[in-house]
Length: 213
Image 1: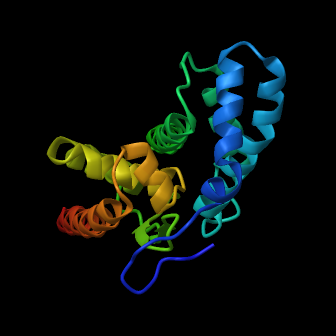
Image 2 (image 1 turned 90 degrees about the vertical axis):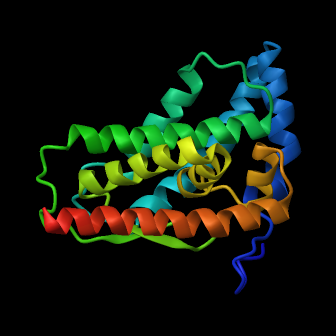
């Protein structure tokens, strides 16, 4: 598997390399009523969710109230109890990213009693390509700020907002993101460079405003 190079371009990914045809086939079989296909699909999905959750949580405190296993289990239950007509693997990846984002933001909102600016350390939240933005999952305000920034970007450029959601919350690679969005890999690379810069700037503005308050 190739990693991002010095220009921020991106290479092949786990699902694209190994599981792409299998996942699409199993999703179609499951939709057709084949319960055995679901039995085969569940371990693949669970392994992917564990990988994403571990990346989120590895830099957080050991006493953080949302552990990787809890995050995985919540995402797992939401995905497989949702009333969704799965279309293909790309659709499944997109919904997985959205689900992970909603869980993290919901958890942050429940913990909003933590006072804004209470000194929680900002740690890097890496995307699937090795680029980081600095937030702390321990401070719910920071995760909510991230979600609000993505909502703002969505009103300005929905495709770029969705791309950030895919790589930060879904752990998708460039090829996988291109598949989900229906665009070329060069377009993904270009959009990602611009949208990362926008997101960092927006979060810095929010942090400066918070410090002045």
